[in-house]
Image (cartoon, rainbow, N blue to C red; front, side):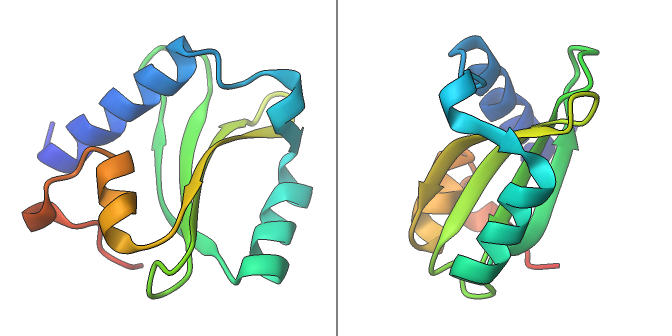
Length: 108
């Protein structure tokens, strides 16, 4: 697994074991994605499937310059997305994803 994949796996495991997917942080995925786009101009820039076999998907949304970003845990079988983290700036995004500055998350 490459460094970026390892970072995603670490963050993903941490978010799931921390119980981030509680009812108060979750909503219909399509609604959440629509709001991220319309309110903040964020689009999907990266995703990774859970290695736990639970069907969950880590999704990273950001503006083109990463001025704002959001990390969701999507639960496709339930049609839900749970907000795991939000922030401002590429440096904070890389830190949230545990990515070294030299391995910055590339824009799609």
